[in-house]
Length: 484
Image (cartoon, rainbow, N blue to C red; front, side, top):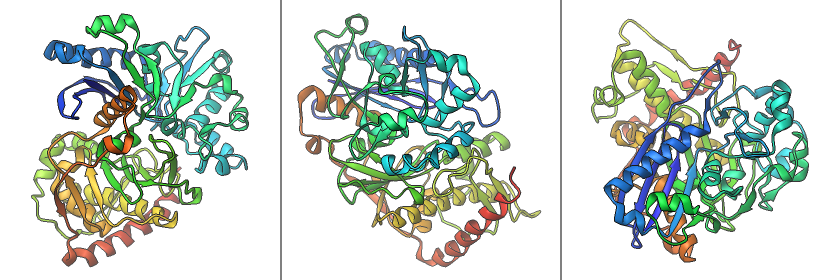
């Protein structure tokens, strides 16, 4: 048996697979996000441990025999979070999360440093880890002076699981401290934020041995023998491993809390000016590019909170027949935007509202706005040298066929639907646990699921969607001009 643990923003998922990669069981532990000030987003690392104990505890109660047979564990996690530890591994402050934008000034200052883009292959985004440490140095100097180790969220879980400070390439590429071509920490980039290599965890590939489960935890969970903990992956690279998106030309669109348009690459192809992320993949000698939008299903969840209708009810009111855009446009910049704008200050908006703009019209505009944000990412990927012939849809938003039709039409590419099953980050993490424990061939393990069907672009609405996209594109500079 092999266990995948995915530390997300809203919860921890634990998933068991067998040697044939059949999913045996899964369980979830809930998490909350603290937003003490505008633009802030934090979590207590102790809550990650509690949620993991909850999820694995459920598996122990429901499948004790299977859990006892675990030989490998893989980790996946939300990226970019700054988990600050002192010399005794005590947490110094709440973790500053990926969607926290307080460090936008520090990010801009680091981004103009000529070292960063050539070495990291990326803009220094406010959500990345390095500017968060620069913010702590500027605003919480007493805490900064006590920092002995900086860990990413999943690697704090690894510390609890194994007692070791270890990370891997895909997650570390999102810190702005990794030389992404060399797949190693850059002492020069770390020095720019007042840190050194000694503040960083050791690095392994995602498929390699990244620690051994502590005996105390193994006994608690009823597991005998040594259990390998794989290097693992950041959540998007882990999802790619789950989806088999590991070879040149493969791509997926993830409609989750944030949105990702992900393309696997066989070579390092940086183009930071496009605001596309270029990161190491979880597999050795592989990289990937992705456009990232900060509020995908989060946009629909926001509308749900305002209207008092859950997301399923809102999308259900639209039916499954794709409609032409109404003229109401939604910009999904509820917490700023990454690709293509790199703008932490911009905020969302509705335009074109009229007396006739009912709840269904607003829902339609939200779904279209997110679809057009994915189109922005596609155009950015194209400018970075990657074009996509088709994509596979994953994430909670992919349950809405209406939304998938809107995305297919906005992108003008077919959207494939995987067969029944869970092929997300927890499954990808479990695959990495299998590879590390068995020294298995990564490409033989990380194969794509069967395709259950495809959604083609609605050609009859292509013109209407193209016009709506042009309106969408024109609104950003207009709204930006009045954003504070």
